Amino acid sequence: MPWWPIATASQHLHSCQPTERLRYDFLVGALHPGGLRCPACGSRRYVVHRAHRAPVLDYRCDCGRVFNAWTGTALQGTQRSPAALLLIARGIAQGTPTAQLARELGCSRRHLLEWRHRLQHLAWVRLPRRRLSDGHAEADEMFQNAGEKRATARRPPRPAAAAR
Image (cartoon, rainbow, N blue to C red; front, top):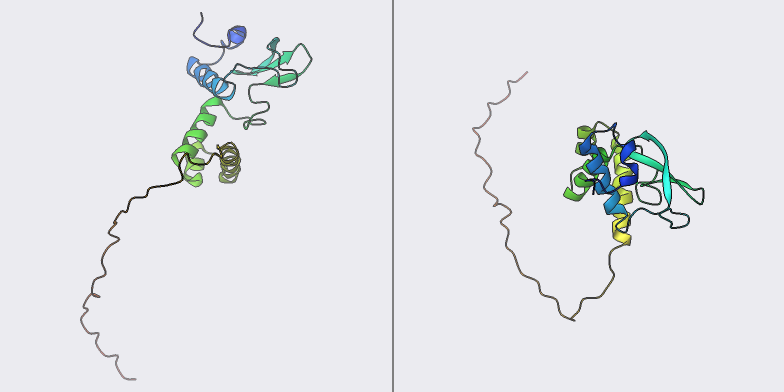
């Protein structure tokens, strides 16, 4: 078995670096754990339609729908490379400030902020809303020394201003 999961697209991926293929395959596996399917009919019978943005491929299903791995996901409409998408996701997960992330990636802070809000909203919406299994919760106390106030520093008296 080949080392990339999307064997039907292997001949179209030769122009990109193997590490970029691995990043793409990782994202496809994360976004489509049951495997990539047509968003219109759910079929797995599709062929490569275009490979102009390798490794991101456009597929055409038997039903006529053209789609890619980002279609119907939070990444739909993005033109970023899989490497950039993974860096953005890692930065958001680690809590890296949006401005710092934008500087590191060389892109718009405002655009990244929109992506952050979109991804955080989807994560919030998909959180399980189950109640706790028991009616009691425990909490521990913690003392954190926030610093002590000290007396103001003693300064030598200033010389009197000369009279005019």
